[in-house]
Amino acid sequence: MSNYTVATLPRLSATKLSELLLSQSSASANLDAPAPASNIAIVDHPTDETPDHIGGHIRHSIHAPSSTLDFKIPELVRKLKDRETVVFHCALSQQRGPSAALRYIRERQRILSLPAHLEGGSGVGEVLKKNAEDGMSGEKDADGEWEDAGSKEQKVYVLDRGFVGWQERFGEDTRLTEGYRREIWKDGY
Image (tube, rainbow, N blue to C red; front, side, top):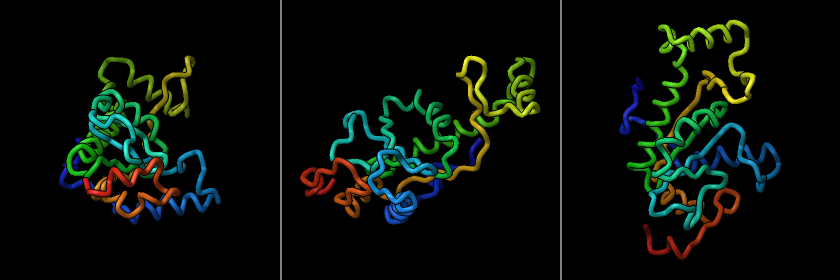
């Protein structure tokens, strides 16, 4: 089980996140690249009442609304397994964003410790252990569908002050924010 709580999750400032994103973009020499940075992922966790990126979103963020989170977390763990950093946020990053980050951390730990928990007679643990011994861990099976989540170290953060804080600093910066609508934010959140 995770040692983290919603209160102890590490926070990342909007300024620090922008520096990370811009440093990766400048490394590829294309700030308007259609693909996201390869070692960082940003997960936007809005309410169900705002099901789309209304008002803007951080460029290349993954949209994971509240109603989809239960089934999307295992998918995110598999999809983001090779990312060095994963940043979660919601509007203010006070409740939904941190809760999603905590669920992600716990699911990641559950998936990564899967072989140890299944060795007691199910047969799955032995197969996974054998694959690791054979150097096959992390590869797809014959159907091409199963993939081990791997055990690469990953930093998980919550964006401090959420998208509200982000848009105050970087809303109009098209290198970092897409679909920004100033009129939605002009009177505050």
